[in-house]
Amino acid sequence: MAIPGLPALAAGIIFNAVEIVASDVMSLLGLFSGPQWGLFQDGLPVVAADNVLSFDFRQDFRISDYPVEEGAFETYNKVQVPYDVRLQFSSGGSVAQRQELIDSVDAIIGSTDTFDAVTPEKTYLSINPVHQSIRRTSRSGLGLVVIDVYCREIRVTATPEFSNSTDQQSQTSGSTTDIKVIPGSQIRQPKAASAAPQVSLGTVQTSPSAPGQFDISQALP
Image (cartoon, rainbow, N blue to C red; front, side):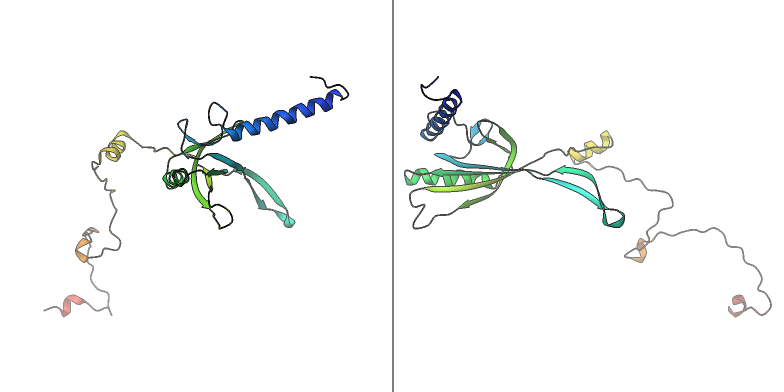
């Protein structure tokens, strides 16, 4: 829409600003058909809050390097570490509403389940809450509870591997398997003398003693 006396570019900027402000006001009033911000599991919100005041996302990458000659370094890898998400929830009104917010956060903070952080533009999958923070003072927070929930990405990539079906059956059913004894293996340091097996080194042939050597057979009765 063109406004008389204003350039087309300026009019477009004004209309975009008004639209953004109206969108923020509608978000505060809860006029959307469904929640667009929060912590969800299976499409349902898990935190009973009136509002989501802020959302923070942090992602880091680690670069691996090694020293070479003359103090130089060579880079050989770049690894993405799990990202962090922080959501700030608030709830006011009655004591029951504030207590519901606190209880809902307490119910998930020690859970090992994975959740999704939902925003209008992107959903951050497979995260788990690792920290919560509540601060209330005599000047702020008497009728409003604000909770910061810190979450971290969970990567589930490890899968069990079995060498054969017998090992898999023993892992799942708890049955025992035969122990294979390797020929020639011996107990090196037994805790008891009876635990050491007798070792046969074969038949030893005797020989007459040389002159000047002591013959033990002469000392025997």
